[in-house]
Every structure is written in C-alpha cells, then in structure tokens.
Amino acid sequence: MIREIEGRKTISGIVTVPGDKSISHRAVMLGSIASGKSTFTGLSEAQDVCSSVDAVRALGVPVQKKGGKLVIEGRGIHGFERLAKNAPLRIDCGNSGTTARLLMGLLCGAGISARLTGDSSLSRRPMDRVVAPLREIGAQISADNGHLPVQIGRSRLVPFEYRVPVASAQVKSAFILAALFVQGRSVITEFSDTRDHTERMLVLMNGDIRKRSFIQEKRIEVYGRRELAALDVLIPGDLSSSVFFLALALVLPASEIVVEHVLLNTTRAHVLEVLERMGGKIEVRIDSDLPEPMGTVRAKSSRLHGTTIDGLEIPLVIDEIPAIAAAACFARGETVVRGASELRVKESDRIRGIVDMTRAFGGKVVEYEDGFLITGNKKLSATRVQTSCDHRIAMAASVIAANIRGRSQIEDAECVNVSFPGYFDALETHFSR
Figure 1: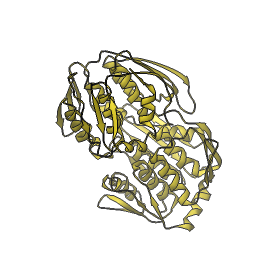
Figure 2 (figure 1 turned 30 degrees about the horizontal axis):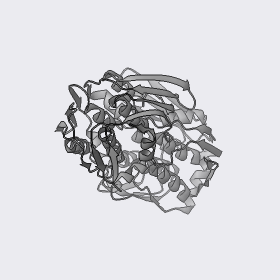
Figure 3 (figure 1 turned 120 degrees about the horizontal axis):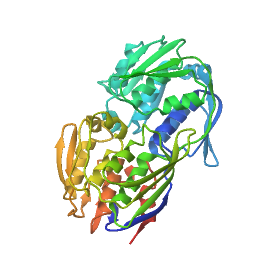
Figure 4 (figure 1 turned 60 degrees about the vertical axis):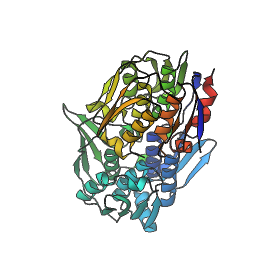
C-alpha cells in the first residue's frame, strides 16, 4: 500500500497511542506463567504483540478478549512446565524479534521443546546473542547459522550466573524468564541501563527478584520456582510510537500536540531529553507510578539545533533514532549518531534506511558503519520513499513529508501495523491547514 502525505500542514490536538509494545510482550509472557487469571487493559494490538499472544495460545494457555481487555488464564510455574507433554511444538513468531528471543528463555527454563520460526525478515535477524549463552548455561537449543529456525529441546537448568556482554533488554529478559523455573539463586549482570519492564512486572507479581546496583554494573538476582501472582493492570501508551507525533509538533509551524497516558519509565523516556537538548519545547507531567511511570507529554513548535548521540545513550533511544533523524533534517547544524550498529539488524538495516530516506528527500547525510551524520536542510523536496517494510522508517518519512511542500508517497505503508495499526489515519485526524 502506498500512502500519500500532503506537506506544509500543522498538527494539533490530544493523541492516544497504542499500549507500549515492550510491556505488552512481557505481560503476555508473564501472564501465561502466573497463578490465575491476569487482565490487561490497553494491551497493544500491534502485529508483533499478536505474535506473542498466538505463541502462548499455541503452548496451550487460554487467552481471550473481553470488552477491550485481554484475559490470560495463567498456568503457574509448575502448571506451565506440564505443558511440555504437548511438545514438540512449532511456533511462528511472525516478524517479532522480541517474541522469539523471550520465548527462548521461557521455553528453555520450563523444559518445553519447540521449533521457533518466523517470516523472511525475522529469519535474517541474529538469534545467536540469545541462543549461544543459553546453550552455555546448559540449555538444549540450536539455531540455523545463528538465525531462525531455532530448535529447543527439553532442558533442565541449574542455578546460573550470566553477564550480558552488550546492552540488550531482550537478552536480559530471556535469562530472567529462564531463571524463574530454576530452583535456587541465579544472577544476571548488565553493564549499562536497559529497559527494566520485566523486573518491574515481576515485583508486582510478588516474584523473588532483587536488584543490586554497583558503580560499573547492576546485578539482578532471581530466586526461581516461586509462584507468581496474577495481574490486573493498565498498559501505558507506547512512547516509541508517540515520539513521531512529538517530532511532528516540534518541526511543523504553529503546532502543538499532547500525548496522554504515555509511558515515562526513565529507561524509555531519554528520547525526550534528547529532543529537549535539540531545543524542543517539551513539557512532561507524571500522573501515575503503577504499573510504571506514566503521564502526559506536550510538544510545541520549536527551533531545533543538532546534537550528538553516542555511547551509553544509544541503548536508551535505539528505537527512537529514526524519529530523531527525521527531526534532525530540519534542525540547524549537524546531528551525529554513532555507536548504533544495532540498527543494522532491526526489521531492516535502519542506518541504511535512514540514509536512503534522507537522501530521497534531498537531505544532506553521511553514512557510518555504526551511525550517520545529518546536516539540517529546510530545502527538501517531496518524493517517493521506500521503507524496506520497516514501520519506523515509514513513520519517520511521514514526519519529513509533512513539513515540506508537495505530496510525498510512502511505499509499503501498511508495515506500520507492526507497532501502530491506524497510524496514518491518526495522523490525518490531527493535521490541519
């Protein structure tokens, strides 16, 4: 599907975005091993999260929708392990890397054999970052040259210690999920902050999980085989989806957008600090702390300037870099992103996608192996943009297209359904001349 964007509009109003995708994945996984019925309001209906829902259904966990809520009848730790009698199973993870990587930890811990597959895009993405270390702690798991399909045998893990070598919330969470089934104390150590949704949710579920912070590392101790309490929670809005509306309000003239009920967890909200550093007029108000910090964000038209993002900042904004790049096209000076080689192995090569998108509009950009440099240029031209079926490239292209004269076309626009079904319709609702 090709979507056309008519440029030089303003944007205004109050935006409601889908439930946070990262929290939704974890809610589905943890709800399936809780003791009793968990109810999640506002769970993301993105295709990626649907893959996680379909996966736990395939395992034999009852899941149903009731009045806009998702209800999961958790099997409990011991009951979930008994699902092994249904194995081996074939589970299609679709396009969702989070589904595949979290399932690896969950299934290895529970001793359930399965074969994990995915679509052509997911089958090109690296899986050895989870497969290899799980094998090191005794799991029976193998990948096809480091990619899907992944074959999981019936493992019986013992307490382990694992030091996460690169900043990855998915790897960390996979090991936490595995540790929940292990009798005794397991320790996962990370050296930079990553998303902590798994840890926060386990605390709410009365899981025996403890965090110890040191100068150069953080240790997460998990005492396994403790039954987890069921949950009844509201999922905050997805900040990674909100940031495209915020970026639009910052670059479009006479614009102002308010996003309500959005996630403001410190491991996710760093993008707001980056946009403020670029000169963005952003106001943040925290309205609630449970199940995670959430609140309201207001963004107004601003004169942006370039910035540099690298090092420890990268894991905190890795999913928001396409939106930052779009805003950078209209900022004075240079915006530099380095140390972001992880972008090469997302749904597409996002560094290449950002570079190609920027050049298609006539922007000035230099490509690096681990990032890019964009020089702000307001003399951009309407064009046709290829997205490589990457939802975040498609949404980033919409930000640029809306701020230049003429009509631009975005190819494969339906790819936004991976994270934000109805994104373009929501955009049109808030546009005005």
